Amino acid sequence: MHVMIFGAGYSGKAIGRLLSVAAHRVSGTTRSLEKTAALGDCGIVPFVFDGSTLTLELRTELATVTHLVQSIAPGRDGDPLIRLFGRERLETLMPKLEWVAYLSTVGVYGDHAGAWVDEDTVPKPVSERSVERVKAEQAWQALAEKNGLPLAILRLSGIYGPGRNAFVNLANGTARRLVKKDQMFNRIRVEDIARAAVFLAERCEPGIFNVTDNEPSPPQDVVSEAARLMGIDPPPEQAFETAELSPMARSFYGENKRVSNARLQALGFAFRHENYRQSLNDLWLDGSWNKAGA
Image 1 (cartoon, rainbow, N blue to C red):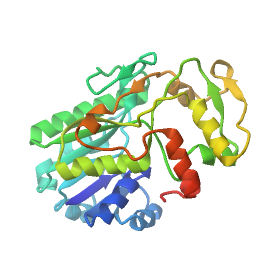
Image 2 (cartoon, rainbow, N blue to C red):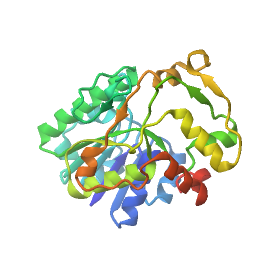
Image 3 (cartoon, rainbow, N blue to C red):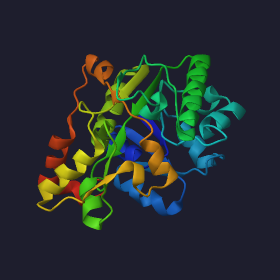
Image 4 (cartoon, rainbow, N blue to C red):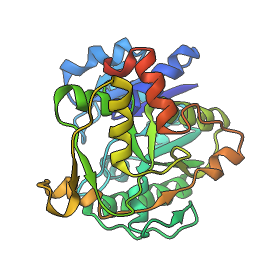
């Protein structure tokens, strides 16, 4: 299996690290030359991709790719790879391609007033970011159908893990306990994103899958639990309605839902970090909470 990860950021590096441990060939892209060393440290053969042009080296690498993971966020102009593959034939660039994964977000479901949603729930995105994600999903579905390729769409909840978590926020003084009545969020450890992606890739499994923990919960509870584990007082609670927030931060609270992961579990996948309490406890005890990419 030769996997190419376009946009090997936080999640992409975790996927690449796990694949390389399993002795698969993994390639990945980043926008800057300065970040290529970090990819190499994860067992990923790095390439620079500016979002629009394929270098000769990258074209040569794509010729042997069997599995493609797209992790670059779309913008107002749509998905950059869709634009690229609209100009060049996918089967010419990647003649050995067997499976495609698109990393999306549970934000596509929009607001459901705290009710449960699953992969059969019709998307009704609220934010512009989520509207762009729905369009990107649809574009990838059309491209995969046109080329006869199995496509897995992984809808991710709020991502956290080593170096990116409530402990870090408490340590640097940026943690807040914002309280909005009945607000519920799901979240997902980055390592479980990697495990889910590899699980699906090894089976060339198509479909839409929510990659999320088992326990949606109020966001302020996560901060309180992290503070308890650190042995410090949590920051005071703040009413969401009167808190000073950026428009982007405020928009996250406009989507209230509980997200089911039953479809992925029905395939036989087991989440290693099923809820935030167990996961935070593990991060604290093994000391990886402040180690990016641990």
